[in-house]
Image (cartoon, rainbow, N blue to C red):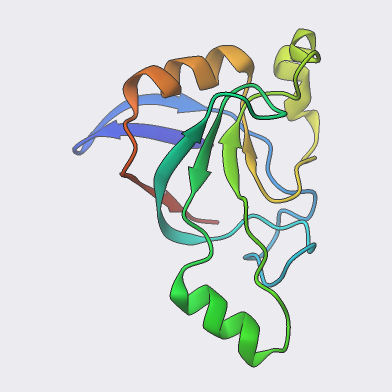
Length: 128
């Protein structure tokens, strides 16, 4: 789930889809996992291939160093986004399985809500 808070007050809870390999933190580019940890929603892309996208500040310097120590690339371009453009009719059915490359996916209506109320620079905690 994705939970939206103002301070300590829970405002909304959303069901989501994650990377196609949802168990465990992202280790390297192409592993299909969603990163875990504290990041920031640092910019937005209104022209994404998916309905509106908020960028997650992954990889952190610690993520990059850990990947480098394993001799792999950490990956990147992790987003919170809606359904692929022109497939919005799928709606909540997209949550039947984890399908992203490591992103966090919501319905188009849900990302519209979040887009309106969450400014750039908002912290995001991604936890198992």
